[in-house]
Image (cartoon, rainbow, N blue to C red; front, side, top):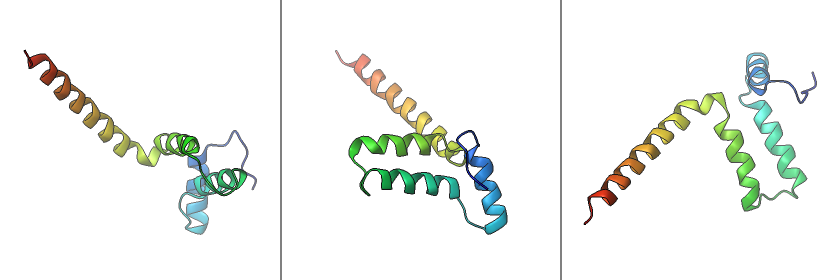
Length: 86
């Protein structure tokens, strides 16, 4: 089976996990190839790619949602404190 650009990585991950027991195969392959194409080192701007991949992973959605809610709450507290200063 060849991983094509239009395949859903979540489907592929589930298929590989079901057949071999390996988790996150598609993401691991993508990361490996990306790092190799960059000379085996990620620069600071390459981490944006990794962050985007992490944020769009369905398995990470509960964590992403919690971080978003915590950020909104912290921003609300910060803005409220600014409003209370004379």
